[in-house]
Length: 309
Image 1 (tube, one colour):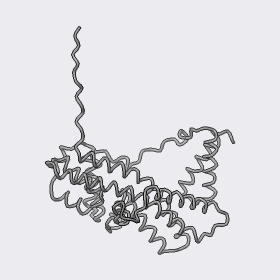
Image 2 (tube, one colour):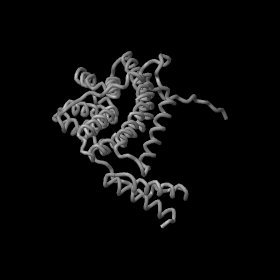
Image 3 (tube, helix red, strand yellow):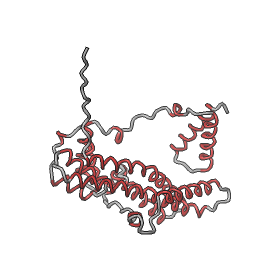
Image 4 (cartoon, rainbow, N blue to C red):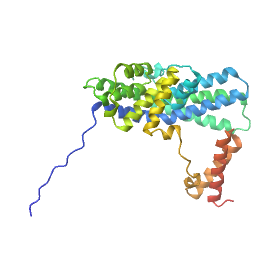
């Protein structure tokens, strides 16, 4: 019996601009946990300022929170813009971190990582200390937020470089609907919101030629930029179009929470460590009511699963 070997047909490779965009997405994903930690630190500063009746401190913390949220293109900050009727630009990344390597004074990734870890340990030790000075707390957490943000910014700079490379590559190809939508998406990732508005208005994009996911991304970007401009009518119209696609359930209508007990699966030492940590958090940290309820629930489940109750 004769066999005929048929060569496998390779899947078409993504175009160069998509590969560059994916590289930026990976760097941005690495920065995200550091930005989240910086947000948590600033929220500590804000909470302390509110308790102390420090209006200037509260405003400073709120401005820093919005700057990070805007840098991450978080939906909540765009929603707040349209509610308040004010707009603002994304703050630039630190110039010092964007200098070319070898020019002197540019901290390495390892140095920034060690600095962030050092300040994290310092903040934890301060919170645990029975002799801590409360007046030192906001400054310490503000310093922690700065160190975490610097580490995240270094990663974001690399992401931005990849996004700019993707833009230059996309400008070298014949612009079809996918390329036009990709250009808008990458400009949005670069936080160049005025350029996004110009791109959306200057050249119509045939949305029907796009996949549903790409249409959703495009409409979401247009809506967020409208919110940033304070254009509530356009934002509402775009939200209705997104809802018709039935693809924004995760953002506008969060799914029911899964039973948290199902996640408490660990070794006995791990369960006891988790329980002790959560009980320490409950004893030493001021939490929002919902967060306190969740922490108490998890601590109880961990304690019961460990057989300590």
